[in-house]
Length: 285
Image (cartoon, rainbow, N blue to C red; front, top):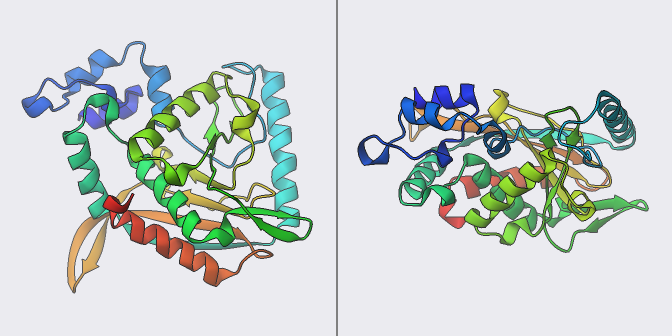
């Protein structure tokens, strides 16, 4: 009940002090936390989509600004669809180990250091990009140039309209708590128009996550000159067979949109295999 009310009111459960047994968060705790908390909660649960190239200058863009941003996005995505020969792959990842690890971590952590599932997904995407450098970089001058580090673009939809993709620099090297803090800070500033120009450039690979919008899978358009975009849907419970026994487990669909000029399906498959392995061994994150 508390989770459902939090979703309806836009409250981040990680910021709510619980008054139930063992500090469990109750519905009344969520309702008390709701007034005045919509702004920060929305930042924690960023709904992310294919990116644009620049942030707005105000928290609530005018109609003209939103229209201009949509035109910019339309031009960029049209060019990407026209010029980039996309190929698409997907896989379903068993999240049992990841959700158990996340629960234990949050149970023993102060409220301010608790993690959302997005932190695990982003870290797995970044580490997999480090393992498969053919997907981490740029296609320019008819050749691929690998990125020197993994700078993860995180696509964020803006409340007043439009999209932006701030960059989490060196995301593969950030410990999970720092990655979570950087994500919250970056999304908050993206939605209040306070990003610096350097924060919306130089991403070597982008992640889009529409899970909090109820989407189970997303196949995005690559942001040129990058050569890959990773998508995550929402974590859902599905029948799942393990060692011949059928049960119900939490799973997430991970997708990859990649540039066929730079790689082929075999490389993309290795990337998704790495993402799966990392999420099933969350202690490696």
